[in-house]
Image: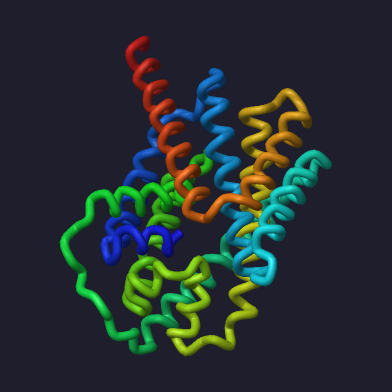
Length: 276
């Protein structure tokens, strides 16, 4: 995610992260997606693209020797788990979130106490297109789930995303950050914490596997409640995509799908307000 944004926007990827966080906070005021055909197709596409992204990240970090098959395998396992009726307990999801926040805090501390790599380039003039692309690839990961604390959760996720982006930019610079799909490995080495690579692998598993299963299941229940055949087809399509597409393409697909879904939700709110 950060690598794609940094490759396009340079230092201005930070502005993209801030923009995504602000947009995500405003989405808490939008109604949930409707039940129309367009809402179901767009919402399902956006969620499936996000599951593909989780699979690609899992493959790149956890199974670097065979990332594409591992990514496809995770998508298939997630689809099979959904068909089998597997659901993650709320308590497990809560503790996974806590563990990820702790990992982010540790990363920020490490990058704060180690002198950064000397910058090879300056900040440069704002790149509007690059900022928009950076916001586009960050936004899907910040959208709130439904509930009374959606605003608080979204603001927290947005703040963490901005902070992690800032320390990664300071420590690596945009060129090095944008060169590798596994830039967080480089970030640990730059922070003189290469011995924490096994812990990073555990963090990636915690960040991708529960999120992929929850995203897939929620999308199937919300947008394809008619049965398991649609879920199985989605799993196969997602696995093929994880096997063939690049991280950049998967992130853009998730971003554009998310924006289209938000437009439909905003239209639904406008229609509701006009008829109240």
